Image (cartoon, rainbow, N blue to C red; front, side, top):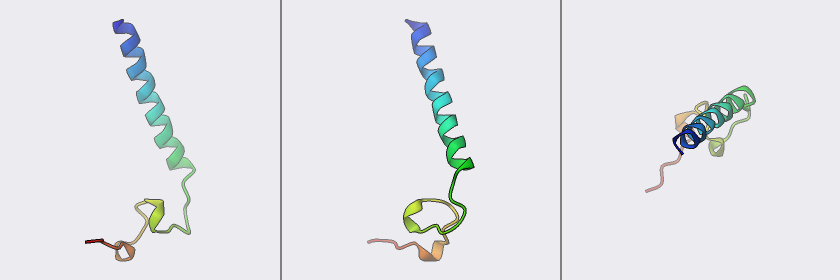
Length: 50
C-alpha cells in the first residue's frame, strides 16, 4: 500500500513539473492581456475591484 502512495505522489510531482515546463516553453511571448495571468502584464493595467 505504501508503494502505491509513493508512486502516486511521484507521478503527481512529475505531472506538475511537466505542466510547468510546458507552460514555460510554450507560453505566449507577446499580445498578453489582463486575463492571461502572466507576470509580463504591467501592474498599471490591473484593475482592483472593491
